[in-house]
Length: 414
Image 1: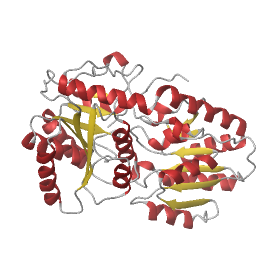
Image 2: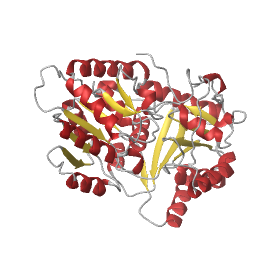
Image 3: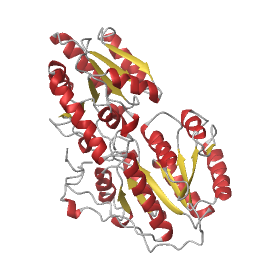
Image 4: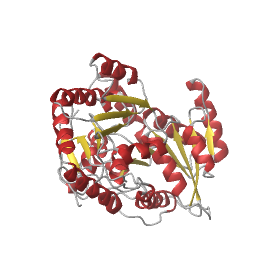
């Protein structure tokens, strides 16, 4: 379904469900994050950054994954953050093990991400640790990865979400548009909170691209899933080749549609123009962005994409689709260019425009870096999240995280 834009003052107030709960604990809150996967993807990396950056004197963090140990577990363990991998296994077995872990950990705040994990953690939390505050993290436009909610599966998902929503103390979304969708489907406004993702700009260097004389590089980083629409990026690459515009495209990531996109590249004879290196660790993503002239994301929907934030932090102009999440980050004509989703020709036009004008591309990249520094820092996101946890458990004062402009759009200052 499509949710119409509304004035900011009609958005749900970002308040806590019910009266604050007193806590007898004196010391840091114990927060448990439950992830469905252990993978180098946006939600998992954001939770890892949050866990690493939180003040251990205020918040003590444990991360549980319904998966075998992977790159996120290795990263967190190296940082001293406890990780409990529960997989692989059947759904019933995972639920049973998760219940035992929660009974042992006794968290003050229990956070689940995504539809399946969110429902399981809220129900188990209510049964096993009823004193815990239960939080559902929404890291896309919807609580589920289903692209549209107006089909039978989407309607079923939202019916389950509405039925179990009373078990949730707070939904925390990284984009205002996600809050619109939740409210439109009957989730009480008092449960809804907006906290944008954050990124540490100090971790991303901005190389001098003024002397670059190689083939322009367009980087597209993301999981190969239907909503990311890498097929549109390949189609745009073909159009630019046919127009004689020199550029090479690097589509980094893995996922269920990677083989299909690789077949599309071969069928179009684009092997010399498009490469698919697979999933890259963070240091190789940073190296790719350091050599990129343009970043591209053609999604049909988003939450707040880390790939766009990272590109902006690296000083790379972004060509993205005008959808929730991307338009919250990219200021059209200032930090990059926005095009309609599902239109490879418009994508090719925008990429070609930046490739043909490297000076304008560098100006947009520099403006994107400043925007990340000014408005989307990791420290600000961690502070807002910590304040919310404290208010949920102890009633400590916290800021009102109300969007400041039209629904679905963050502040456009640069």
